[in-house]
Length: 88
Ligand code: SF4
Image (tube, helix red, strand yellow):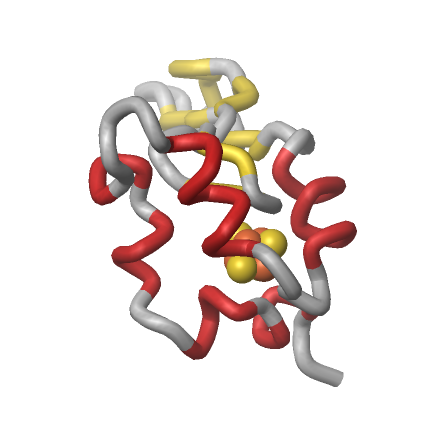
């Protein structure tokens, strides 16, 4: 079974159109709504858009061969693209 996002309008169109940089200043909200209008997976896209992406922790081995934490995991939020008709 294919992932839900392969059914999105943006998957088969030119994905660059969903970059927020390509939206007309002052018309971002309207253009974003137009881009996603009629997309069959807009509800799944909206639910996915509010989920942060968990970056895993980074470890290294010390001189004794033991694993040491270098950087803890953290959450990031994707920005700069239109998701579910909303510029992020
Ligand atoms: S709702 Fe918009 S951003 Fe989400 S999959 Fe559909 S076309 Fe792409």
